[in-house]
Length: 309
Image (cartoon, rainbow, N blue to C red; front, side):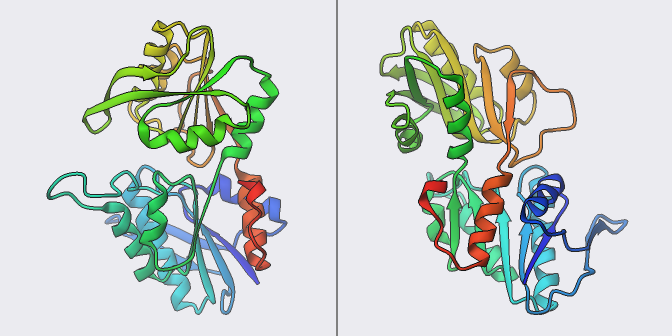
């Protein structure tokens, strides 16, 4: 028996996934006490059920994360058989190693919190770093938004494509994407002076008279994307697109994108866009079919089809 539960982070996405699966979201109360503490009550009977909680941990990160943990505790105490966290965007993932002294590994900390709360499996999308899967002592499925982004670009029938990785850490992602277009690869030599601030030193690869697609797992302040776009434009790029699975778009990122050389920024609905007018350059693709298919396959104990990702 499947039960779908949603926090407040991705309510619209949760409703669409439920509709795609042909079931209803379980009746759940997730609200706040007057002092800001989270109150949760599961109205439906979940005893012996496989419960899927759909909740990204995007901004406000701590609020959404705490909601997920409190909902998990409520389900555990209601005797749910399995508690599967469907976390399209896994927050706190950018600190996945000790890059210097006296810093935390927050990606591991969050994994520990998930397990301690009672989550028995995690479904997430496009982790910032693949090794984060090793932080979990429970099953984790890291799926990809590649199919929906790939289909979008295929329909545009672009010519002379070069896939641009904005840093060395994204080379594997860019290489996997490039093989579907039989495209060349370029890499930005990037330095970070501080968090959310990047300096693009050079571009490795040929971009002159090419259609460039800058590819990354997430776009936050959009500083890296726009600076890479500026450099490759100066090197003669003909057209510039950008794509990321997760559109955090914090601060004035939308205006930064609007004022940049980027023709279109392709993101998914793993994170809901802020409720304000956004630039027409941003295209949002749906991950609902992927999430629904993965949930259906796992609920039937089927092997996840690699072609899906």
